[in-house]
Amino acid sequence: MKTFSDNAGRTWTVTVNVDAVKRVKTLLGVNLLEAVDGKLLERLIGDPILLCDVIYAVCKPQADAQNVSDEDFGRSMSGDAIELATTALLEELCDFFPQGRRTLLRKALGKLRKLESMALATAENRLDSPELEKKMQAALSEITPGEEKPAATVGNSSGSSPDLSESTPDR
Image (cartoon, rainbow, N blue to C red; front, side, top):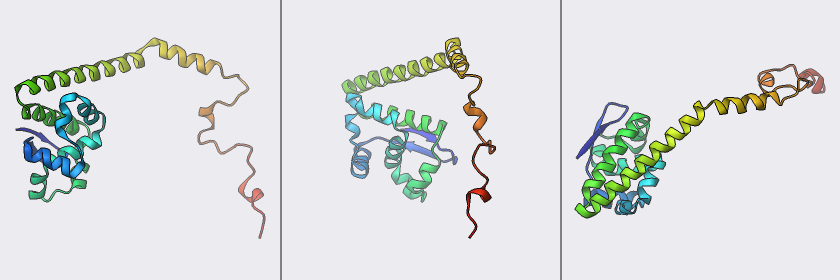
């Protein structure tokens, strides 16, 4: 059993067993047994709303005992709480399967985490790249001196539109 805390300070115990798998399938139509092929892992990691719904369904007996609705649970899930809950669910899901499938699932999970880490590093490198700044400066320099720059128009009410009193006929 794995645990995590939500943003409301509640501690949840994630237990994946046959009862939880059936409950998730009944409530959400999500078959946790499909995690072995890796596609479900991608869906869960890529969709935090689905992930939180699955975690809520897994933890539903605890939520019912504490009178925590699905909406209350969702309101307490953001940021690090989602990451902690994800880890708890995925590790517990791995532990649910027999040794052979467990090894395969852990390997798939490891590859998925590595891919996610690489994608974040690539995005960060692109944002930190001097090339990006050069491209931004080049784009700005293409604006001719006589053209109004988009940033200058934001919040500027002194355009060529007539005053409200001029554009609205008297009644």
